[in-house]
Amino acid sequence: MIVFVGIGFAVAILALIFRLLLTRRLREKYALLWLVIGLAMLVLTVFPSLLGRLSDLLGVEVPANLLFILALALLIAVALHQSWELSTAEEEIRRVAEEVAILRADVERLEDARLSAPGEDGGRTDASVD
Image 1 (cartoon, rainbow, N blue to C red):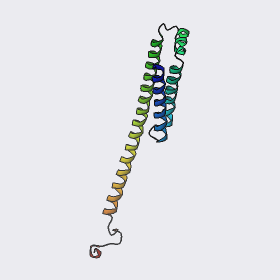
Image 2 (image 1 turned 180 degrees about the horizontal axis):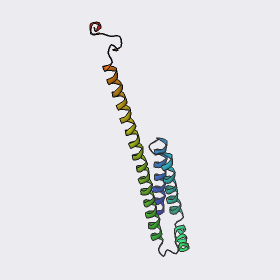
Image 3 (image 1 turned 135 degrees about the vertical axis):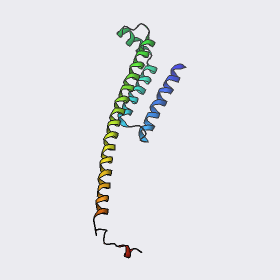
Image 4 (image 1 turned 180 degrees about the vertical axis):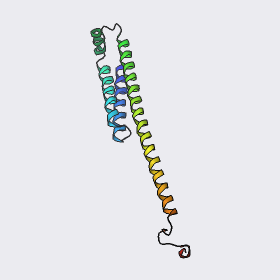
């Protein structure tokens, strides 16, 4: 019975990943990681003895401990990747903010130069104002 619950959960996760991917709520570079995780969940649910064999091969006494170690390593990897993405985004935001500040200063300087130039008001005088 628990195998069917595990299979249902893994299939639901895979369906959610595909739905998020198709509706463009999840980018492809993240979807690949989550698809691998979902498929690994499905494989380990369908073939539970695979985890036991893998833990024997790696010298882990309890298969559940191997699962926890793998989950912890995955969480650390995801956190590290998100930190890297955040650092990259912060740098890009800082660069764009600096460019906007420079452009804003240029626009203000040009407006001041246009307003202070004598006789250059675009051909309009106070008498021609409607």
